Image 1 (cartoon, helix red, strand yellow):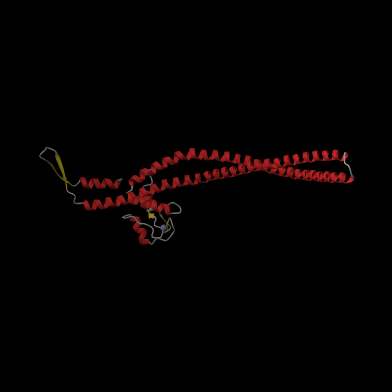
Image 2: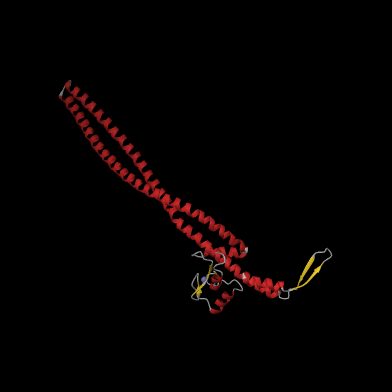
Length: 291
Ligand SMILES: [Zn+2]
């Protein structure tokens, strides 16, 4: 940087004496008359440097945020699809269980029918050997009763068969839905894997780059930056003045304050939102430094 060199020259120009000490080593005596001024410039430079480091860090952090937003939707979509599939499969299994229970009932009705038919057959045989009309009528009543039982069982069987068919239809519908969702899931999983493969490397690079900038920023300032960033809705902790307003919260910045920001003699934050200000000109001057 040009300014730094000037300082170095100033200091160098003040070498006033070179003497040899007792051990034979040459000692350079420098009189730092301009020390205060040089330190002031140094301080000013370091504020600018701090602001620039924060600004570059912000750029990197914003890029990471963008990757996370881009990726943020897909994992959720994949998870939702997996949940929906899991739910459907559970329902299908439940329906199969229910069908099995209904089929057991159908078997029971079949047994009842066979029993009734056997009884009817026995009663009819008994009717051949009755001693009187009353016994014959009594058996006829039993036969009628068993016939009604058979009819009831047949009715129940029809009802059960209809229930089995309805549930089988529903299962078919669920299975179609499963196939449909499975197809979408496979596609989304592929997309997610692609994005992860693509962005994980980029993210790692950006995080490494962020570490380089972080190392240049004093811990207190860095933690302030991170705190502001966490609370800021757009993730911006350092902003420029845009049309006389804070680039973060858009509240108007008075001209005197804008001037102070332009001088960057100290770190100035927005009174409304707490974001750190960086002078546009400073950014533009150093646009090609780190790129
Ligand atoms: Zn603001």
